[in-house]
Length: 141
Image (cartoon, rainbow, N blue to C red; front, side):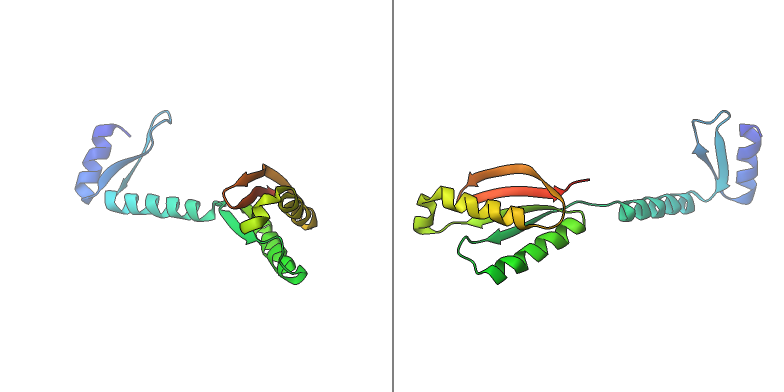
């Protein structure tokens, strides 16, 4: 249909002529209310955004002298975050004189990382940051 005929038909119906696929040869257009067309597009985009997997950075903070059960609770939380597809930042918090014995704090964090049962990879290596050591992990795919 020619452009003039399509415009005339749209005017008769009191609607708009909206170009749907501009890259096609010839371009595809629909006779529809522009407000309705825009609403449908926004609804489609919202649905796509909702279905996308958004990976957040979750943070877990542990102490080197924490009891075994406390560490197991934190480990389950880390595994839950990893299974949901999030990146996890694990920080071991050192207090006072604990900061003087950095090797001990680092080894405690390494033990914690080895104890995680879900397959994971370290994306940010262990480094000293402020009050302790920090490492980032995510599931290995």
